[in-house]
Length: 201
Length: 257
Image 1 (cartoon, rainbow over the protein chains, first blue to last red):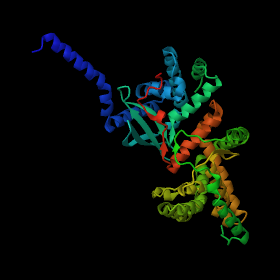
Image 2: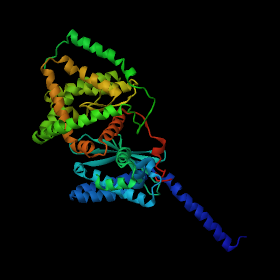
Image 3: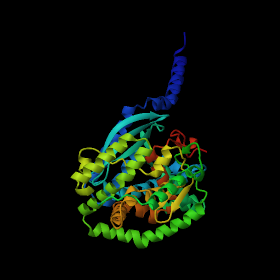
Image 4: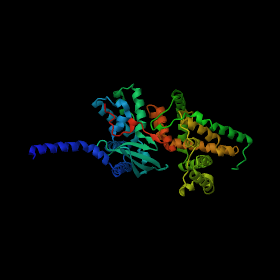
């Protein structure tokens, strides 16, 4: 028979193991229904912003909040930077992710007027390797419908999208090219890049 | 618009171009697979010069002309012009649908050609769309892709913009073998050219926010145009793209040491 304290110790040990495996266990538990739910929420929130009739600046602010809430901004920002992302100090990393998020929000948020009167339909979801692809169609006024593809993972423990692909064009890959060009202009100086990102978009 | 029997000179032109097709394989560098981020641009320096030229032409010509067209010509009229330009592209689409073995596309486009000519006032209105027969748009570049020709190197063409070696040859054939310009007599054939130019200006106007952002607001407009074109073209052709191993793993921490 085990003593009380030994049982407790063992239980703590087991629960630590359980806790440490919880994130990867959840990672496999992400289902297509969950991935689709995330995209439904993003689309609903974006539709709400479009329909709000707010000023463009207010809409950009709303878009930034949506982006921060539903997107894996650290992953998108980090992979846009590529191998240069390694070796940043914590402070640089935080300032870079912040500046990148603001840049993306301004750059794409100011195009919101193009979506007024439009809608997005979610069509299907499929598992690809370790993530899900949620396929949808955007119907914008005066334009032929086009395909959207949200890539969703839960690497952080939360379901977040880490890329948006429109007619084959990946937001992440396209921004990787642009961020690379901005960094080249600063001859690899991250702080210079951060300063430029704050003004860009 | 009366159709005329092509002269022997036109046939000669056609056969010269057809023998040109066989050179395509030699022209484009064949590569087995392509990654979504992969860029093969050995002529980047020359391409960048063309890009600067294109930017200047856009700034002084295409942008102001397209803005004028968009601002002064009513949306509905622009739509009719666009429909008509699309209608005149149908014979070339059908030829390419057939060369690709795409009978469904050829059937749909043939239906559109007849239906819209008769019920769409010669193609300026698109009632075929209302009965759910959309255009299956294609070109010689896609035909070469279907035949197994790889895209080859990236090319930026003067005035026409981003392309690849394969699609450049395709574009030359699109211009020279277009049934509308081969079989229509002058000056009728220029109506098609004018409609196409107006349609392009309409597209430049409709997409002005995107195009201006790429050409005039990005840190490297050449690289942006290149990555946007290659991704979209590969998607349109249904090219199987593989993502670079280090790039797709959403569980990898990009900031990890």
